Image 1 (spheres, helix red, strand yellow):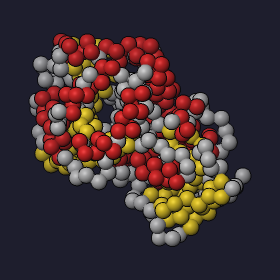
Image 2 (cartoon, one colour; image 1 turned 60 degrees about the vertical axis):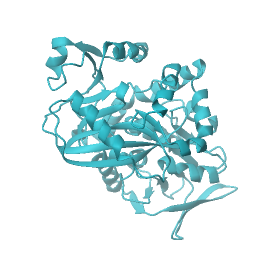
Image 3 (tube, rainbow, N blue to C red; image 1 turned 60 degrees about the horizontal axis):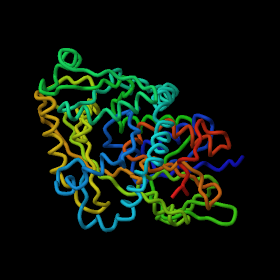
Image 4 (cartoon, rainbow, N blue to C red; image 1 turned 90 degrees about the horizontal axis):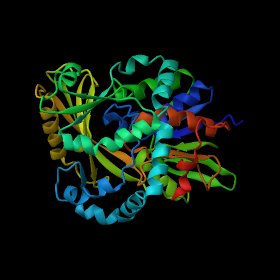
Amino acid sequence: MSKKPIIILGAGIVGASTAAELALRGEPVLLIDRQEPGLGASFGNMASIAVNGFEAVSRPAVWKKIPGWLADPVAPVAVNPVYALKMLPWFLRFLAAGRPDRIKEIEEAGANLALRSLADLKTLLGRIGAMDMLSDTACLQLFGTEAEFAAGRANLALMDHFGLKYEVLSGPRLREVEPLLNPALPKAVLLPDNHFVTSPHGLVLRLVEAMRAQGGAFLKGEVARLERDARGVTAVILADGKRIEADRVLIAMGVHSRDLAKAAGEPIPLETERGYHTQIMAPGVDLKWSLIWPERAFMITPTAGGVRVGGSVEMAGLERAPNWRRARFLVEHARYALPGLKVEEATEWMGHRPALPDTIPVLSASSTTRGLYYSTGHGHFGLTYCATTALAMADLMTGQAPPIDLTPYRINRY
């Protein structure tokens, strides 16, 4: 086996988890990112381990909402009119993912990752001595009306199909579980396996620390291109001209993975879903649970030393300035759900989730280049899937059988 380090491009939660997993196995690892670890999408995620989050997004119930969303600048999903033309091919693929047979395949592929995600994360955290970063409490899924709850029964049916536990709460039982909630909310669903982490950025740093403790290294640098020949990948070339020899490279750069993939002759239809959060350090409430309100597409999580309010989907590309109105509208939703919430000592953030039209990631060896691998396109579930995809990719890159069949996640499925 080669003694050259396995190079991981991208130091977000996906890349850092895989780097730590490989280093813990005794593999030489070099993790590279253009900025310090965990400062991309992983910095601002909602800290959620969404074990039930594998329902296909492209489906008729969602299609019916799209016209209303397009007309509302603060809708749960917004598309910039100018950018919409550029992403038309992506949107057509998104619609194609809503075929009944494809929906079943997508949900099974998501479930393969999600159903083992919590157990795999606990194992990884235990190995690096970071179990303190996982919450003891779980998640409440909120419903604003009985009609919303009725519409959400499809997700409960999916959970029943895959054997996931949940409890429907209403009336006094709901107030007992979380008295901070607005009494006008008629129902919630307790999701006992949907935990959260105490700091998404902190977790990335702990993973990088664990990698370094096993002899791995981190290098700050911008990747310009990959060098390849008939044998496969041979080197990573940085923007400053530095050449790093390699025979195994994993691309885990989120939406930025698409440029290197295209250069390797296998373009990925990756888009950016811009997400927003407001981190409130003096919330005035002692929230124990994470809260998710699917109809309004936002979460509230006690994380990073305060309470984080975030979510939404905005399709507007990488370059357009943030629309902070979207973050502030999410806070209005949060204050309705939690009337006692104060918004003091607050900061706003916007980041870029890597989104594929069928909403399942690429976990794959290259179809064109020996020694090149991909772990990207996790969308809203980078943190949820991180430990499971780390196991799978570490196995794949070291010649072992991954714990799940990776066929649904192949790069050339498009």
